[in-house]
Image 1: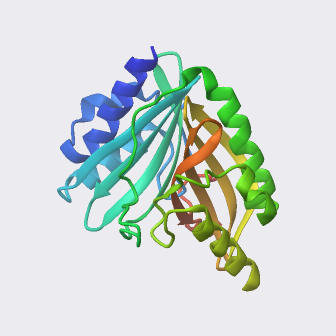
Image 2: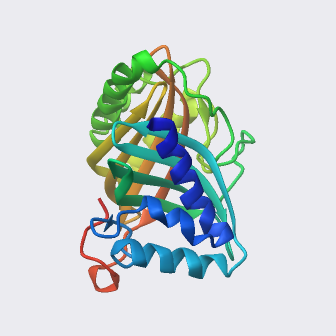
Length: 254
C-alpha cells in the first residue's frame, strides 16, 4: 500500500503539469480537508486549482517522496510563471487522501557551497532507525530551533560532513553556528515557536513548525537526512501565512 500511495500522490502532483483530471480520484471529495489557506475546500477546489495551473504550462518534478503511516510527503520543484520549491503532505484513510498541507516558496540560490534547494541525496535508508531519527530531530527542534540553545547544536549536527541547502547558508557546522549567533544578536529575526508535526521514513525526517520570519507569521518546513544519528544534510522552505481575511478555507495552516 505504501508504494501505491506514493505513486498515486506523484501522479496527482504531476497532473498540475498535464491537466489530467483522472488522478484526482485518489482524493476523497467528501472528506478532503485543505490546509493551504489560498485554496478552496474539498476535492473540487483542488481540481480547479490544478486545472488553472496547468494552463500556465508548468513543470513539476517530485524530487523526493516518503511515507510515514497514513502520511505521504514529498519534496517538489515547480516552474509556473516563477520557479518554486515546496513540500507537500497528504494524509490517507484507506485508498484515498483526506487531508493536505503544503509549504512553497520562491526558488533561491544556489548557495555559496554550490547546493540548490533540492539537489542531494534522495535514497531512503535505515528504515529500522526511523523512530530513533525522529526522536533526535524532535530534540534538535525543541532545544535548538525553538529553545535557542546554540551550545547544544554540536550534539545533533555532523561536524565533519554537514551539507546545507538553504540558499543563505553554507556547508559545515561552523556556518550554522555563526548564523544562529548572528540571528540572536539581531533579535532573532527567525523565530521558531511551535512544532506541529514530525514525519519520518528511515534516514529522512521532516519537521513542520510555526513561527516568525522578520516579524511575519511564517510556516517552516525542514527536511533532515541523518547518518548514524546525526543530521548530515538539510533542506527547507519558509512561507508567510496570509492574514485570515485572505483565507479561502477555515482549516488553518497546520
